[in-house]
Length: 185
Image 1 (tube, rainbow, N blue to C red):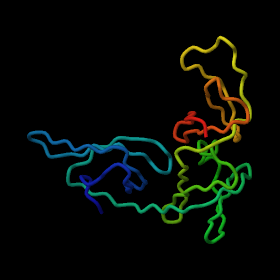
Image 2 (cartoon, rainbow, N blue to C red):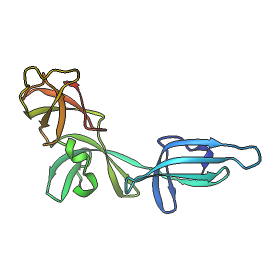
Image 3 (cartoon, rainbow, N blue to C red):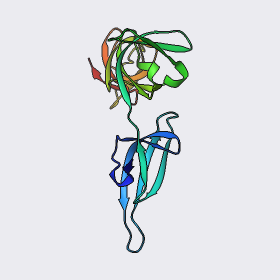
Image 4 (cartoon, one colour):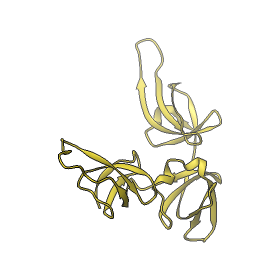
């Protein structure tokens, strides 16, 4: 058990039967009332974000999240298959649980699969990943106002906005956090 006053961003804990990761924590103390801790937290199973205020002396159970490096093998249509590089054990994760991450997965990519007591929660992708542009609109002459962009499709089929000078076949770096172009690879 850990005191809620010790919660910091990135820590994981169990509360009311759910797993949460702390996004923000602030301590508040007013003149006559007891101290309280306001915590912005994300449910690790559903992905929803909530804010809760705890009393200053409340305790929550610490949750130990396991992270295993695995290789993405293939998509069966309803599930994604990953293999542990050390044991060659394969696991399947429902595609519905990885709707955002699937936009940035290529076969044989290395990812970190997070789990809690054998239950797979999801995966952690690298922040910036290089991709090849497979399709892009031609740049229109005279369409070069400041920060002009055009649509482009990366090799996974995900659409991003890129500057006008990027052409098909080029390698670009894409952020897996927000899906935006970061630069040339």
